[in-house]
Image 1 (spheres, rainbow, N blue to C red):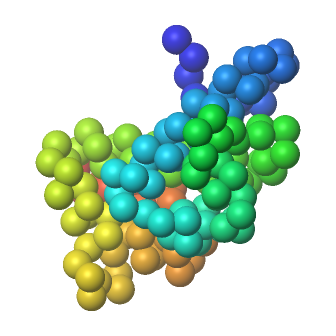
Image 2 (cartoon, one colour; image 1 turned 30 degrees about the vertical axis):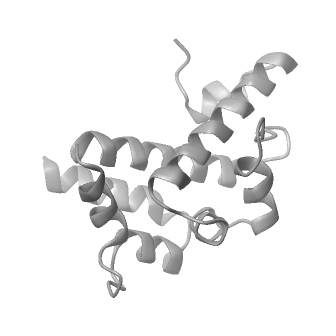
Length: 136
């Protein structure tokens, strides 16, 4: 089993393996955006990248995250976002509870999603750490 870490991704040299990994990451991001009802604008703000990049990663069949063109900080943000999603999913079995935790209410300006958007992609890890502390 391949562990999805920054170092493991950076160490992949085989072109076909990199393409498969890029497809897998694209599928994961697409799934998160669908489950959490995040549109392209939301994803772009969360990952601090352009809408066109998010669209190329998630909006089409066989979309791919081109790992050779993703800078290190963007890759770390993607991995942190996937880790946050996995933690939320394992912490809150019900879909509505996961959405409530991440997005809060429609008037909640201090939800984890809004804090990430306001403060930048480095705060994805902060939100993950906050949730881990709350459940431990």
